[in-house]
Image 1 (cartoon, rainbow, N blue to C red):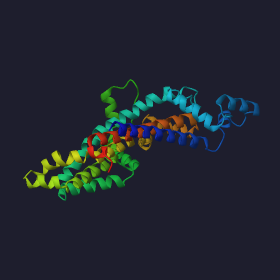
Image 2: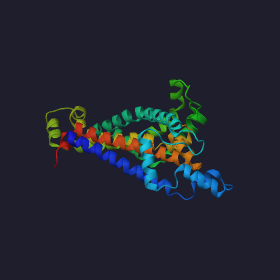
Image 3: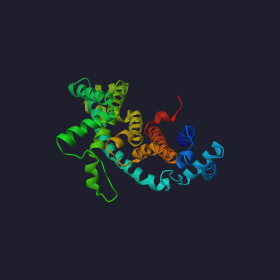
Image 4: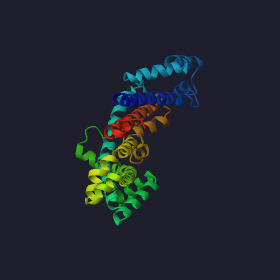
Length: 315
């Protein structure tokens, strides 16, 4: 099992290296010249050449990538082209805000989705199952920005219960921060809960056709006990995978939600960096998103191996 887990971790590191290479080369292939963009149309050839030399733009792309990657491993993400400040100092507070919002949404979404999935499996083809399935289909079909604007109209404009903008700052108290970020957290919950609920229901119902489940049923056990005690542990692997995938989405897919609610997270920072053509900041944000996504998926693979003995052996 140790070799299998080590292999998954090694595959995750290799994937992260490949993604970081594609990310760096992708941003380098964008049209335009960074030095010209920084100095403007009044720049002379001498000043352009000096700035290119200072930024290392005369070096081969693969050498600049290795320098950038080695600096990122050491925590040095370079300086912003927009304001000249270290990117890490600007990125970390934004990352903290994004992780706070993602954690808030996860605490709402995971228990709700898994609980509804178990309940729908217990009441399969009943009224509860039909209502839950229909509701999740609607939630999946509606774009997240539309859900966000509908919630703003109802809870901010009409009822006045919650603020329409999620403006936070570092001296804000915990409860006040929870209050301000409730609407974006509910929006993210509605977006990701549907996938987790449907996967939980489908995984449990797939296990329910197994012979040992039929034996448990013939012994007279109630369906609730059969689902929770016997089916759920064996259906845990795909549920863990989809939960991890959606937790990753809560971090890397919040760009639209942060823009709608003007939330100062890493997604909003990347949008601002793109508009200013601040490529080092865009690369740092993309690398942070990739690291989060690959880490959570690798963690899901490892947990699936630990909870399901069948995955430890070759078929």
